[in-house]
Image 1 (tube, rainbow, N blue to C red):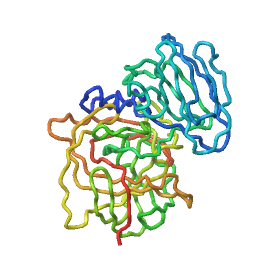
Image 2: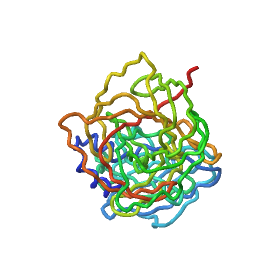
Image 3: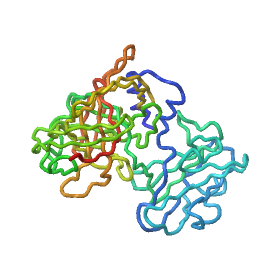
Image 4: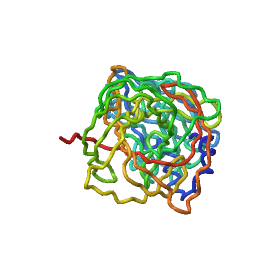
Length: 391
């Protein structure tokens, strides 16, 4: 959990109930573990916390017959010891089971529905070395979240990655470069995408910074992956096209014009230099080219009221018409990694009597370089969407 950033943003929002806060602060639970490439998976026992009194055994639950017997025991296994679980094909999901001897209960990686109490008991995150870190909570009914929980037992698995392929919702804040912020290292991108014409995107200053969000209780998949939106100084030729866009808000017939900005997957920090985000297996891994969007007449948009939680904090918003369509873009002739991660961004205005956002300064890092921005106010909410061309 990014505690410093959470503390920095806490002044900007109104705290909601424990259930919604837990959802926003424990977003990496319920995440499947997927084999990245054909090869062996090596499990490493990182150790247990001093306060762990229960006797626990780790098993590989599925696929069936892949590895039998106890992988690690938290009292008899030595921290740092490793076990080769064998060879697996790329794309195979591995499910691990933690058996608590004292209570005779079992807790699983993946969906919380597999657990006897219906609560998440395994937190899964990708590491900078390309492995998967799995942390368990062994007490039923009280998975220590929000807070510094999931610290009873910890394991690392090579050649596995958390499968966060579903894009998150994002709450976007208008932003400006902080005083002394360095200019972009990269000033242009050669991009091609499904909406517009390929061409050179000349990058200008940052316009906004968006954080993963929960809308009316939706799950967050990639909690540490922000999206920084940049102005385009020079834009490719306009591609005026019509689209049918579907998402949880409805079905929208829109027309797109010229690209107006680009979204970059970004790491952020409130206390020091930001770390480059691990994009592998995230819901958004590519730059997103954004196009101004307009509803096709005679469609009318009826404003929606939604509760949006981001960074563990919650506010109520009025959602207005869509403003832009953002779509994964291939860079320098390479293929897109998650080609269906489209976002339709709507104007979002806090309802009356909601506390105003207080400016927060954050360091950022992405493929364009490092910098720092000041968030000003909430402006948009971006929703995962499906896209089809209208003739």
